[in-house]
Image 1 (cartoon, rainbow, N blue to C red):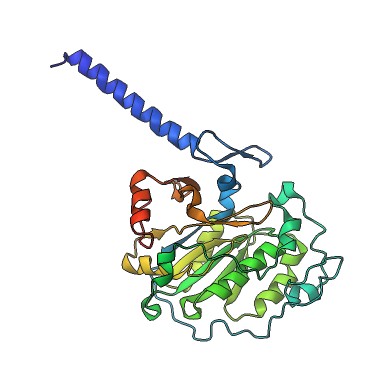
Image 2 (cartoon, one colour):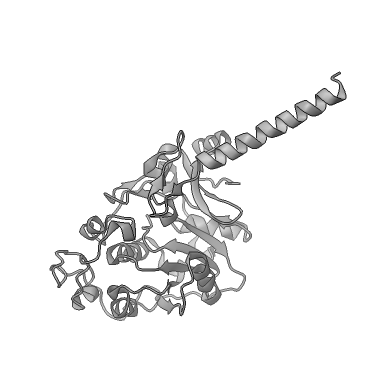
Length: 325
């Protein structure tokens, strides 16, 4: 039996060691940025390609209390959206921007400063806005069938502030292509005081082609979290899904989120988020480096390594959701 003073000293030492480990893990697994917005990689466990602008890829889904109604003709367009064979006017040489933005004759390449957008805008504009990305799901996921009629209906809320046109249109195209029409009540775009020319009248005209896209323009600068709260307050779906305006969704992205919330309406669902390189726009699979999305108590989002238990759960049953807390 240890003397009382020795036991107390050992307990204090153990508590200090545990606190130090927690602090170290938190510090080394969270991306940090310099004042000018450049990423600082914290060694030794972080990999740059997973953390570059990780805040630009967050999305999540939460359950709503009030019931929404379904829209059978959700993806009916007021007029047909064509992808023009010619480049944009104003010196742009693209073949896949929507006809709507081409009609306005805006030179989308005139403002591509990477220090402002933190991405290679020129490369984004050179990447087709209707591109197909590889199906990166585990093979087991392709065989999972969901009862679409039993799933809740989603409102997609997109916060938008001075986003390059190509990244934004690529997101909308991917949602339309990869979402069952009966599962999306609406897409709500909260414009957070954008001042880029293409996000004014051209954006209004683009959204007007679709009966399910709504634009709400903030009267003052709100920031990401407040725009999401605003979007939630006007959403009519059963579930609210948050997407950043520079993301892309992949095949089968929505059904698992709605299924898990249907099972437990108190859940906040964090999907497996693939990565898009901000310089090359190459699409990479999420689990290649055994990383997962992580919400802190402040609701800040980052990527952290899978714990051994989580890694075991993913390997044994890749189609099953696991707790991230």
